[in-house]
Length: 164
Length: 164
DNA sequence: GAGATCTATTTTACTAGTAAAATAGATTGT
DNA sequence: ACAATCTATTTTACTAGTAAAATAGATCTC
Image 1: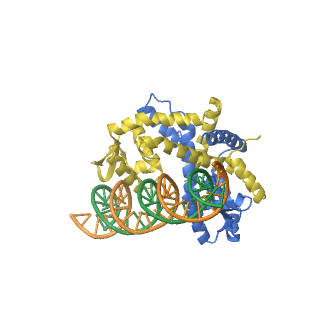
Image 2: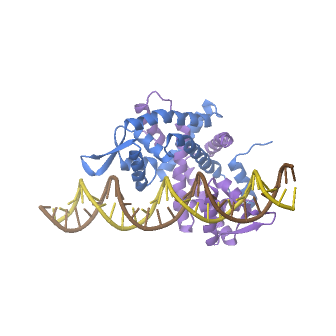
Image 3: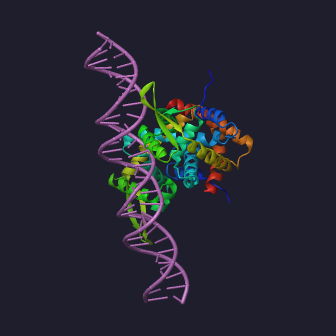
């Protein structure tokens, strides 16, 4: 009758096959990987009807919360993809009319990206759905637990971001 | 002088551009995505010298903690990739001599996968390094905080896994 | 002020991942 | 028993992501 998650099962496996190892760090890191992958799949499915991929939506969100046009390199840093991917995603988004690219007068190497009205509209439509979907995943936790989890993850994020 | 993580900055952006939205669920879900992506990049870099990708290493770990040979479909479920990816990863791993594939006498459709001695050796060599790397990422948290974080993530994982 | 060097983005050539079709073996209903 | 159906894996055809080279613009040094 006991309920187990993916990591409980993985720990049982390691305990049997490599009993000498202390695998306790997977309790946190493997769960983050697993939950992240499940959430990513879910986001992809939910965005499909809107005709954008997760990566494209991530670019749109980055631009939406930015203060004015952003450099391609800033978008690259925020999305954690390669510069080459930013070029490709930008091309697809321009083709769909969701963003536009403009040169920057102060530096001819730089390409600025900004949402079109249609891109803003897509965010206004879809971002609340993503927030609601995220909230549903958190529905098993009390408000206090969510706050605690957010604070612990923030602390972890600060360490991991500083290591990279 | 205040330190902020990726999500603190994202929240500031949303607060400015979409002040009417309650974006609090990104406090948990976006941090999980971000930490997961950073950890995945790190794992890829650390595995490169061993000559395996993260996806291949994930297959090897799945087999290492399994009890005997596993079906291709079980590996597919554990890695969260497509069946087609399992076929490709298995081919590369067979070519590198790290796993072998065998038919199953009870059902001719099934392909069983198991580690070779060389595959076991690679896990014995590399898995402890991955655990140590994970532990370093957690070094900013006290043992009590790690346990609390693991427990909260486990609760979240149970919800999210049941939703999928 | 002109080469040398550095930097931002794009292009090229390639690898990884996928959905859907194909294949091949098992099961079911009559 | 045998055609129809179901299931596990592989193949095919394609998309997404990347590293490294190419391009083009800026900066630095003398």
